[in-house]
Image 1 (cartoon, rainbow, N blue to C red):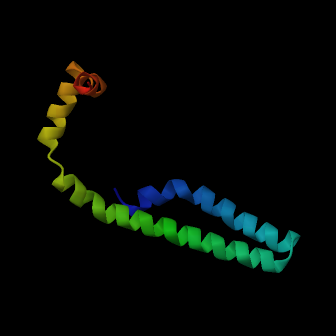
Image 2: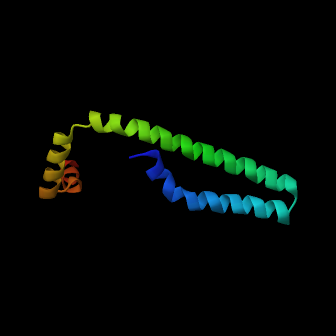
Image 3: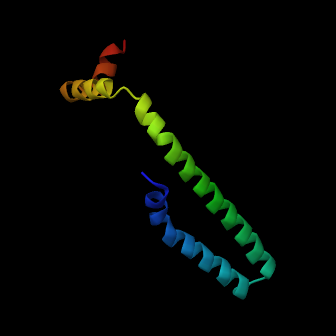
Length: 91
């Protein structure tokens, strides 16, 4: 997983956001357009921050997870679903 593979699907939305800000600048009060530009910039920066955090944290999470235990739980769930096991424990 790389930053580019995560950001690539977001590019059309970013382009649409820029187009909306430009349209607001020409069609309405420039103050509103500047406000929208600031809000859009904040949203993009927040999203990029989340992407970078995910790229850095994912390898660590994959290393910490006990994949043998996950496989055992998945096999047990095939035999008897988790919801059934939980319902049996209810009084």
